[in-house]
Amino acid sequence: MSTASPSIVVFISGSGTNLQALIDATTSGALPATIALVVSNRRQALGLERAARAGIPTLVAPRRAWQIGDSDRLAYDESLANEVAAYNPDLLVFAGWMHVMSDGFLARFSGKMLNIHPSILPAFPGKSPIADALAYGAKVTGVTVHFVEPGDFDTGPIVLQEPLAILDDESEASLLERIHEVEHRLLPRAAQLFLQGKLQLVGRQVRIGDA
Ligand code: GRF
Image (cartoon, rainbow, N blue to C red; front, side, top):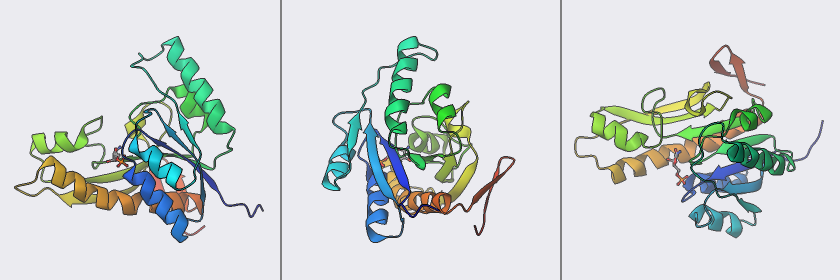
């Protein structure tokens, strides 16, 4: 058995606070892994600075608003998949990555991709789940970490979920802050469980056990 530290590629689009939680967990030893590469589709993403500060290689891969099946988009996904595969990652983590990858990309890394989503899926999928939960008047929302599988980004088997009550005077900013606190615990924990081989898929159910 190899004793090399498992490697993770993290995909971001924005501030990268979840990336920071992963970096901190690897630094403290809570997550015994190496972040081999950080991919951002936005050159100005603050998360790139976090990666640079931690000495992690970065790849900026700007995307356009492609349509499903667009041949340029498929070429982009294939080239990005090749660059990511060159790092031979054990795990891909989508941590605020704001673009759905094509099935070709997802099939290539099937079974080793996790995504974090700021709602209790299947409620409030999509790009603005926090605002959507508030606008709906929901009393509870929360955080989901799930596998990503070819077919649809927000519908993969659920690894961890934690609910959060929405307060009467809640603003989007206050809810985001409380959601982040949960996310920053759940995401490193899910990555650790995966890399320890403790996640077992039984149908759609992810069982967490001793490996
Ligand atoms: C997080 O809330 C994540 O759940 C969502 O995008 C946000 C990214 O935040 N998918 P950050 O860039 O990690 O701060």
